[in-house]
Length: 247
Image 1 (tube, rainbow, N blue to C red):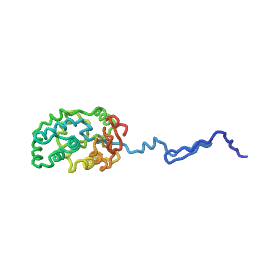
Image 2: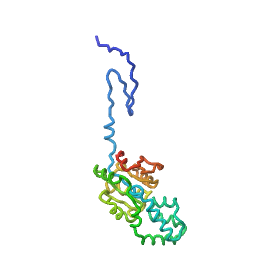
Image 3: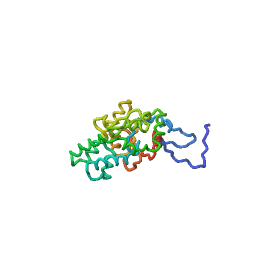
C-alpha cells in the first residue's frame, strides 16, 4: 500500500511570481531556474565613462557669462541675454559667436579676432571643479574603468586640465576640433568607442544638456543627466559620487 500524504489545515500559499517563472509551494519547494545574482553577472559591464566638460566637470557658467559678455561689450553689442548664455554654454565657440552676431557677419569675424587676443586665464580663474569629481574619477580608475571627455570646447582644454591637475585622471579627450561634426552629432562619442574597442552597452555618458543627451542617444550609449532633472535621460545624479551606483 502506498503512503498517502496528509492534508494540512493551513491555507495554501498563493502563487509566487519572479520574472517569467511561477511556482507554487506544495509538499516540496520548487527552485526557479535562475537567480538574481546570475542575472546581474550576465549584464554588460561598464568599461568606460565619458564626461561632458562645462557644467559637468566644471562649474563654468559664470566664466562663460564673463567671456561672452566681454565680447558683446567690446563690439558695442546689446548685453548678453540668459537665452544666449545658455546656448553658448552648450555649443562650440564658433557656434556661440555665430549665434550672438548672426545678424552682423562683419562683427562675427571681428569677435573671433578679439577672442584670439583674450587671456584664457581670465576665464579659467572664474571656473571651479564640481564637488566630489576627483574622488569619483579616482574610484573609477581604481576599478579599471576608462575615463574620457567629449566636449564642445575647441581651445585651451590641455591648459584647463593641467591647471586643475586632471590630466592623470583621463585616458582620452575629444574636443570639437578633433571631429568634423561636434555635439549633438555622435561623432565624438563614436571616436572614443573606436579608440578603446568599446561596445555601446559598455559605456555611460554623463552630461548636463539636451545637446549631450541627443549625442548619447544617437551613439547608442546610456545617458546620465548631471544636475538637470528636466531632460530625457537613462539616469539622474545630483552628486558625482552617485554615478558609482550605475556601474
